[in-house]
Length: 284
Length: 237
Image (cartoon, rainbow over all chains, first blue to last red; front, side, top):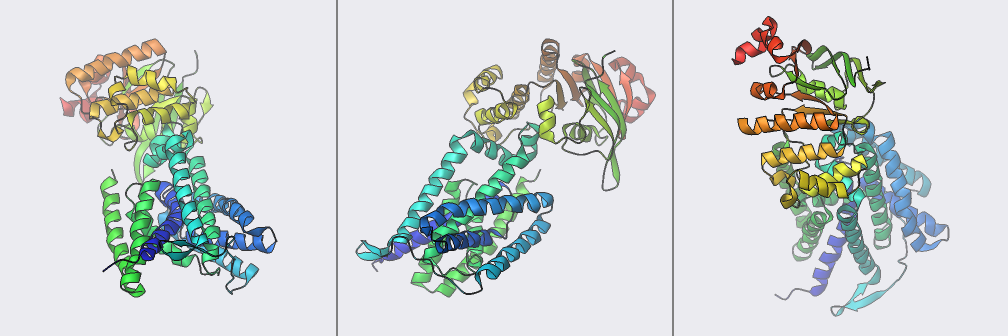
């Protein structure tokens, strides 16, 4: 049976979009070790920042540039006021970040109402790709995801800051005893991860309906992509996103969306067991 | 008489109601070498954790170079000149040997060329790109010490530096440590179980029993102390 190339392109688009969302989570969960249930709402905040900036007449591109800064600041405050105070209490962190998610969502409802909104793509229309029309903005999001992957790889593996962050991830206590300002690095990494979520929200907003629930749909697949990722770096996240995002897209196309969701859920259970086993093995 | 470099006063730390450190007091002068011995679970490693800031004491005072440091985070204490090694070599396993030293150099504000010098000095140049976690135990220990020395510490806390080493290697470590203390003027507090190593250090010995310092003095005198013999040395022959 010949495979429709557009389906493959869709799977690639889904994988790269998920990578964009999951890369921020990979920083906050993979690097800082915080299970941030507000990650979806940080994405939501990015989308609404783009909406607000567009409504203010500054256009989509200004919104795309401002969203990571605004949401990065939001992430910084979340870390300062909540997360660092609960550093050694993972269950409390879960509850607190869930509460933060509710606060962000309700703030959005209070400011913009419960209805959905539309953001027009900055470059509307399609280009013909592999013999079929393909939306330009979807291609832009894919390009942005690749750019973020390159930026993350450069930051982590070619800069002194990246080296310090990797040192702090490898062993928090040892890094602190060696003189690294671990808390400051974690705060920076958390704000950066939040900023990436904001960027993902603003980037994907023209492809989706912008409503107060839009962050929820991304949370589970993004966590799965990070959990399945081999290693904590951007390459691992890309593989995780390809497996989860691309896999879900293909199963949905060839079988059914329900089966795809079930496959994702089954994958979640298996992976969580594997990750728990890996964590237990690492304890010393 | 000059103030001691490290001064611990009546430190107390418990875990789940069990006293790990129960009023320990200790002084260490600039450039002084002191071996700290005691049976397993007597609080030696917890004492190190209190000095380096990994744990906070419930009571007592920690002064370093005349300054109260009990409220400072670990990285601030490291920058004041407190370097520490661990029982299981404290290396960043996922990073290469060179990257480990680069992290230590960056944290201590040392120039990058010192990383190359440290690799050469520790005999690790040929292993520079290997992941630290894959290095043999002895090389991990050398890497760990090289990282600590990049901090230019005024005080070294060494937690069982001869764990996993043969007798000959242990004695070589003792000789290197004596040289280091004499040459650099570094003070060192060494937790050790290996009594041959402790004797070879030729330093004063402090004995920790049930969370406090029970005796201190030359090895021969401490070894003759009835309480120490009963609780520790006697049981080890």
